[in-house]
Image (cartoon, rainbow, N blue to C red):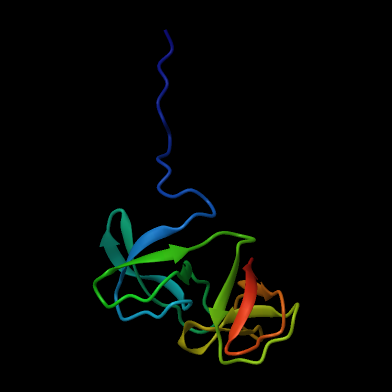
Length: 126
């Protein structure tokens, strides 16, 4: 008889939302990154530093210590707040306060689908 043993436990499926614990107050649409060691299965997240590679986008606002849904996954499209002027097709990086901005020297994490307007940008994650 053959004995089969799983080699890996899949913690999260690609392109799906995960639940984290907010290490600080986080606003809807901010890029977040893993900040400290959390309690499984919820990673602890903070607002992503400018130029960094984020874990994903905050689906909603959360106070420090509360649970937060993090949207992630290549090619998913979202409307998020931004103070930057962004043109359609621009490659984007994490900017100040976890908002998207045109890529200059940071990691490219998204692409603008349209010009920014009314304090938001429609983007697709890369």
